[in-house]
Length: 132
Image (cartoon, rainbow, N blue to C red; front, side):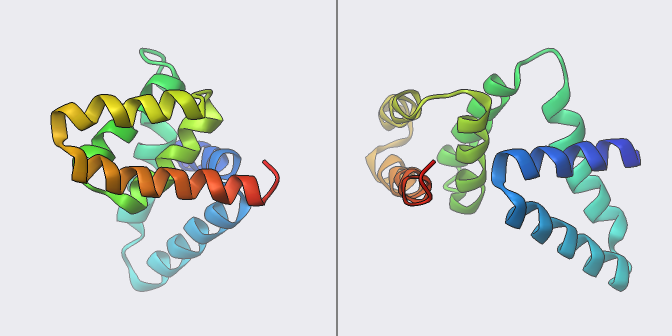
């Protein structure tokens, strides 16, 4: 992956997740450089946040929705938090995100979507407390 994709990935993280999240990713990358695992770190940021999310075949909004569904189905709470922020940044509304949870409750079960709802509403509460 190129430096360009890595930089695009960090820029999108900064815009969607905030300064602290992007700075944390850069700090993890610096640690990876120091311990010799930089290639994996480069690839992760460049591929996921730089390359894949910037492809033209789907909008960022659609890609964020796909990521959220994947996180919910696989019970990936940490990723769901980030991808909920990405979805809101990309234009999904809170009502649309709640509807995704409702729709998925029929397919992957109420316990899974209840736990995902806790994560999603935590993101909403965090944004509300920050006045966003």
